[in-house]
Length: 52
Image (cartoon, rainbow, N blue to C red; front, side, top):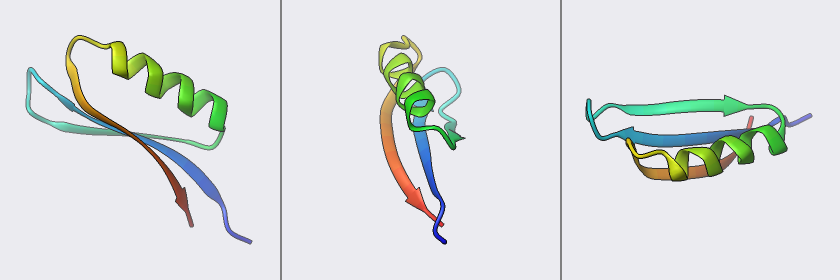
């Protein structure tokens, strides 16, 4: 059975580092995605569904 995870990826403008957080719960992941979109130090914020 396939497992769906939810991934939020963004780039930190201070360090230039790409960061990734993964979630099992869609609501928790999407809330985090929305929070990162408003973060002053995050750019290129992406929301992905990953099936494993």
